[in-house]
Image (cartoon, rainbow, N blue to C red):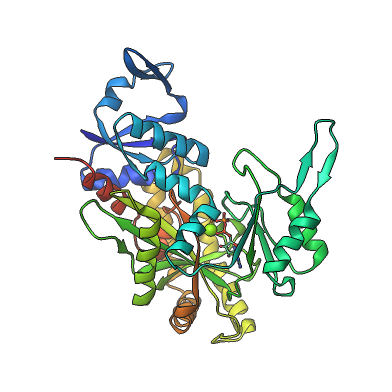
Length: 394
Ligand SMILES: Nc1ncnc2c1ncn2[C@@H]1O[C@H](COP(=O)(O)OP(=O)(O)OP(=O)(O)O)[C@@H](O)[C@H]1O
Ligand SMILES: [Mg+2]
């Protein structure tokens, strides 16, 4: 019985998983999920692309590593594979919870994990009547939010499902709030309603923390988080051009992260999650912003060679060689004193404000090869493959 890598398109993360599996001597089977037609009938099931029959291949699979990128397709994939008798990483139950920021927050809240105050209104910003007339609900929704969160402190409107900072909007006055609510529209991934959140007064960084659980073992939190940092935008996503740093985590945060992940993984034997957390630093800053901005600018200069390698198309033709170039470039960035300075500032700030941490999102299929792995030293493919192996019944 084998482990399958289910994917839509083979990107760096998938190539990284393949490379890691080779290094660990683990055989992987590949499932190009998007192209396989699944057929079910009284005779059983079949699974075929236009050119290849995957039926027996799937029968011989024990565990599926689900790397489908679209949230809907990933949820569908886990569910189908479970119905075909496979173990999945992550399970459809976990995919269902992590799909939605609101569902994730409900689970964390129920376990008493600190979260940003969040308000959900199931109504959409605009309703279209049968005769085509539009009814605008923005004002009513804004009032409901303002009853709970003072607008003067900032209100974050966010798409319930989404990534890369898309549709995450900050309002500080009434016009902005109405405009942001108006921007939210039901879509194929965001089906109903609007989510608002208090603005967490983080400083210039947030944290991504990896927690994993192998079957039969206790969950473990990796002791170094990836900090995404920059002053460009209140959103610190790397997709928006922010920098990444490794940051050692205080023990109390590691323990809280385990509790957080456990509340999401409940009911599944093995899982791996990337938790997003913010530190409510407020005015408790250790250095002044002007110094920090100058250091970040210099670090950004040192990061340019990394960005250049990332754009290098040889990753498609010779992944191992491209990866060596990427690692060398990243090491050059890490070796600068600006990187070291900022990393220290983040670590001190986290230590000083460790009781002001809130968790706001969990990623069930995180990107890791280009940033998380290099910044933290944890190749997420390793725990991923170990979790998969733990699910194979011997
Ligand atoms: N309530 C908040 N207060 C302050 N900043 C926030 C808040 N919510 C989100 N942010 C900022 O916006 C960024 C993106 O938000 P979030 O992580 O919720 O969504 P995302 O872009 O879908 O996530 P990802 O790409 O990390 O999967 C966060 O990393 C954080 O920097
Ligand atoms: Mg996030």
